[in-house]
Length: 543
Image (cartoon, rainbow, N blue to C red; front, side):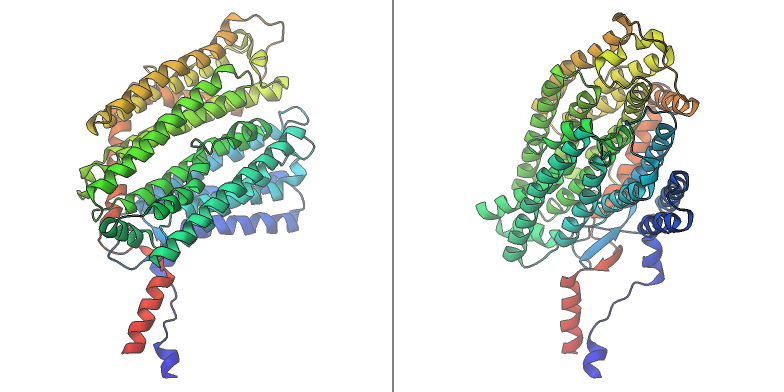
């Protein structure tokens, strides 16, 4: 009995369970969709409404925690070693993905009743469809809630496996099946690399906690083998972000998947991957790390960002399929966001409450990127549903066949370039200022050069819409779809003009809230790791 009493049997308390409420909400939504299918049968509307309620509740719960006093902490190397961390950082990214998930569900709803046959998955398959979609969202939520090697691997796989099924969900479409197969094969290779890297790190440092690994690296350095292990481990994260050289799946999957899944992967997958990358780099380059380690990490990420941005933009040059063009565009924008990650070695990392330029730039860029992408993909979707075409030919004369869609698409395209007076310009300018403050001058040149390159292929689409004649009839679109894309265009214009200061202020406030989680303060709402449990067990038995 004494042994049983001394052996720690940990259970989360009420506060910890409450802090994890967004994760419970997503898990409950998955169960609710499956139960709804048993009660109401294969009813697409019921499944969509159930999934939307789950996503909405998750966003609401995140908003409640996000606007709280911020007493949670995370990424605290001197505190208990966490497996799951819930803090302002994770709340922000989960809220962003949940709100975006609501838009994707609305996109599916509109498409089911306005798309041509064969362009969407069957409504009869809605229970499985939304189960996979919610499962993907759950995995992405886990990705930003941990710094534990084992949990990172499980989270990435939880996000990836449902995505493989979603990419090939149009079972009668050859391109969809091909996209799913390529996605699975490439994902399997990167997963193997990630697991291999994690096993090497665990075998060498005897811990699953990244904070302890970072401390070991800062004191004893890292051998060539351990450097290789870290690179292999980060391959899985680079795969989610579509960073070069792990980007090859992106254009084929974007082209073959249904348009709403393409939109989901273009934003949510990258946001979760960037969130996880920020977690990892923030811990590995914490205040205990040596300047040499910080500079090395910054340079490595900067090189990856430059190559990713350049490859994405040049590959988009010859694309005529709009989904493939936007796929390469998303790769390029992943490169821009990785440039902000490269700033994480700056000294402000150690200042509690500091306005960290990396986080501020990523928050501003991500928010505008969501608006630009949902607007651009939404118009590609409505044109594809109405005409059955997703190529430049389908966009010929769009500015005259449907002036509203043409105007909104032009706003989205020019904002993606980074031209004023749109939100994309403000976000990119803020990024360039952050790079200048970090003295990464060569990366500024790369960003400006790639911006000029991207102007060409975005302008090709605008040229086709206004200067290429077409005998096709006017395009009729659903009112709800028009309202959604107009709202996106309005947000893009406002964040570039009247509310540009508000966007920057919001980004800086989130930087203060989010980046203080790296400080060794109070522990977060966490599940303790096996390392902590073993230490507690030894202490209890010793007593």
